Each structure stands twice: as C-alpha cells, then as structure tokens.
Image 1 (spheres, rainbow, N blue to C red):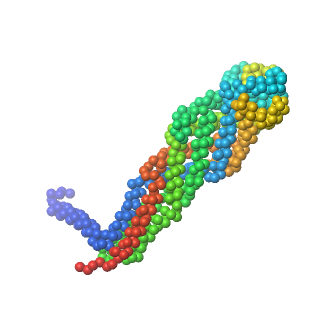
Image 2: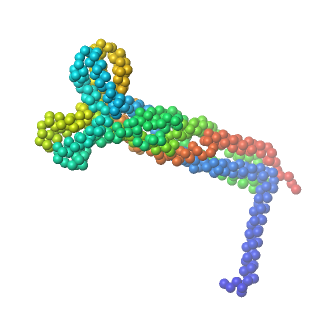
Image 3: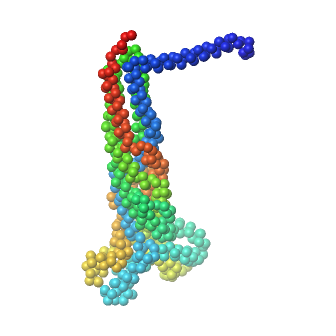
Length: 537
C-alpha cells in the first residue's frame, strides 16, 4: 500500500494506537491508585506482599532444586536405611571384619608365615620331641590346619601361578591361553581362586585406587585392607547406622521434595486473595470474615510446620547431612569405589575355599585325574609334579575348605593342652603372645566359615531392586558393590546441592513459622483496624 496516498488515514491509525496505549497505561495507573486509595485496600496489598515474600523465599533460596535434590538422595538411600537393612549391613560388615582378621596374617610375607616355626618349636620343646615329629603330630591331629600353614603366605601361592601354568600347559600340550579356557570351563572354582589371588595379595598392603582416601576425621589415611575394613565398618556403614532414626524421620511424611511446591501454592493463593480483596476494598471494605481467611492462611502454615514436625525432622536432617557429608566428598567416593572393588576381589578369592560349597577343594582331585588321563601318567606322579611346581597352591587346596580347619581348631587346642600340660585358656593366651598372627587367624576361621553362606542376623537384608535376599558373603559384597556405593556415586551432586546451598536446612522451619505467625497476626490485627466502612467525602 502507498502510504503517501493514504497518509491521513495511516496517521489517524497511529494516533489511535498511541491514544489506546496511553489510555491503557493511564487505566493501569488509575487501577493501582484505586488499589491504594483506602486504608482497607492498602491493608490487603500488605497481604499480597506477604504472599509475594513467600514466593520470593522459595525462588531466592532455591528451595525447589535444593529440596528436590534432597528428595532424590532420600529416595535412593531409603532401601539401605530401613531397620532390617541396617541390621543386615552391620552383620555383614562384622563378617567382613572377621574375614580380614583371618586373612591378614596369612596373606603376605611376614605375619603368620614367620610364626609357623615358632609354633613347631614350642610344640617340640614342650612335648620333648623333635621338630620333625612335632610337624607329624600336627599333620596327624589337624591335617587341614597343617596344610594351611604349609600354604603360607598366600602371596607365595600367587607367585606360583606362572610355574603351575607352565607345568600344566606343557603336560597337556596346549597353549597357556587354551589352558586358561580349559580351567575356566572345567574347573571354574579353582580358576576363580587363582585368577583373583594375585590382585588381592598385591593390593593387601596397598589397596589400588585409595591413595586419596581418608577416614571421616580427615587425617587418618586408608591404605591397607585392614584400614579399609575400619573405614567401611566404623565410618561409612557405622555412620549410616547412627543416622538411621533421623533419616527415617526425614523420609517420613512424604519427605521434603513437596515443601517448596506447597509454599508456592500457599504464596500464590495469598497473593491472589490479597489483590482480589484490595480491589473490592477500594469501594466496599471486606469484613472480618475475609480477614479471618488471612488468619487461617497464616495458621495453616503454622499448623503444617507443627503437624509435619518440620523442626525435629529438619533439625535432624541437618545433623544427618553433616554426619554423612564426608561420605559424599568427591575423593572419598572415588576411593570408596576402589575399596569396594578390592573387597569384591577378596571375597571372590575366598569363596571357592572357605566352605565346601565353594568347590575348589573338590576340583583338585578332578584336576589330577584329568591331567593323568590326558598325559597318560599315573595320578601319584601327576600329584607329585603338581606339588613340585606349585607346593603352596597344592597345600592351600589340601587345606580347603577352611571350614574343616575351623572344625579342627577346638580338637587341636584340646590335644595341645594335654600334650603341653597347659589349660585351654592358658594355651590360647600363650599362642596369642608368641604367635599373635596365627592365633588371630585360627580364632577367626570359625566365625568366618560358619557365617560365609548364611550371615547371622542378615535375614531382613535384601537387594534394592528385586528384594532378593542378601545372606552370603558374596551376596553382601555384591550388595555393597551394586546397591550401596552407587548411591554415593549417583547422588553425590544432589547431596552437595542439598548440603552446601545457603541457608542450612534447619533454618527453614523457623523461617516458615515466622512467616505463618506474621500472616496470622497481620490478619488478626486488620480485623479490628480496617473493617469499618470508608469515610464519605
């Protein structure tokens, strides 16, 4: 269209738009003036401002992302913090602790391996026989225990793996790779033990991946398997047990994720209620009944704070956050993951040899028969050559299952008491003094083997997803590996958002209570001061 030919018409259209816009602005200003024209309407604007303050607090304090993150942490951790789960976790960590007590003296050079000659010498001197006869006596009375002593240290078993592989591959005339496949297929429990052992013995005194891991005190380093046991038992799972009740209180009544949305609704309703009555009160002041609604809104906030127990729950939440904050530290999460991976390896090594169910002991005779048949050699010859190539490995398999060692210990103590003319308690005290590592291992083998397949007091512990029971040591290691530790890994950022956003969560109940009381008191005051009719001009 040619604007030059219809300039007057176009100009009038522009003028009308300007006039309409100006009229709209003027109308808005007049409406605002109307809302503030009387004391009653201004009082109702105060109500709207109170609602606006509530909304501003929700937004300004980032309550939605913060408490939503906190709810995600609660939902993820809830299965690990039921009464039954905590009881099972404590029982499981107790068994892990006993397993470390058993394995620690046996695992590496030093410890129990240096004490074996002392034990033999003590038996020989006290009974007046040669050390050779003392060893025969030990083998006769406790054959599995004597075989276990010959297997020490387990790091020696790990070092024999190459010689064992060379002997078997050359005897069977197959490559080492094919031998590994053969063992994994036909002798899976023996293969599992031998495959996991080198990593366990290499890492026992220096667990890989935990270089930056410290206890919750921020000072004590976690380097060895026993130190890792202390960290898991006393710091991580111990703290979970201590915070169980406070966590359950926080997780109850719907948790905390809904709180900001509830406040937004209350704030928005208060804003709308205030603006609506401010408009009406410009010409017809609202009565006391309307102001009673304001009192009800304020009272509702106060009631919610009390009924939902925000003070004890969020005060407890703050203490729980401070207690668990070290566990969600980035370096600790990384170190804890590495530590649990090592625990899984240690359990996978032990599982084939701790109980008869493990099966490694039964696979040794089968291996001898298999090699004999394939190589065309007598079984006695095969066994002798196996012992020559890997004496500690064969001794460890002869000691297995360790549950047999556990059964021999009471008999051995009784026989030694008679032979050495020492009462049972005095004998144990003497062993603890002269051979502390051996004594610790032999006293721990009973609880470990008896609980390995059915951890005492773990009846209520189940996996997070499918409620599968967690009763055995391998199942408990898998539970830590696949259920508990992923909570730390996945929820780390959410926890940091909950813990480190200002203000602390225990401030929120007091803040909400103050807002509710102010709104209620404001409404009650206005019931008496601004409910009279407006003055006539």
